[in-house]
Image (cartoon, rainbow, N blue to C red; front, top):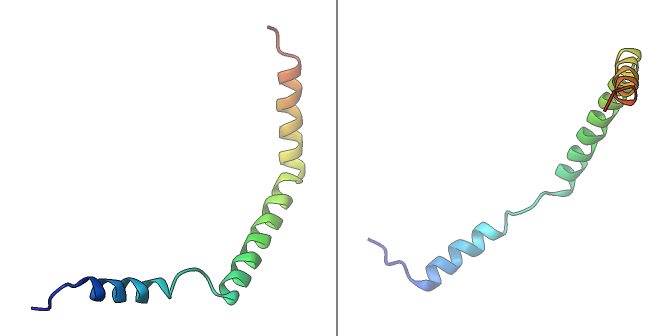
Length: 66
């Protein structure tokens, strides 16, 4: 059985710390995916059906009796 010393634990932690974060390629893919998702959401929100639905909801909210 190996003895768990402070030095051994420090080496294990240092090894795990080297592989943190994303690389440049992962940032690029994440950015492309976020932009594609934003474009799809923009198309959905600016579509006629959603636009008329939002206008209807806002119109009913403004005409509501308090």
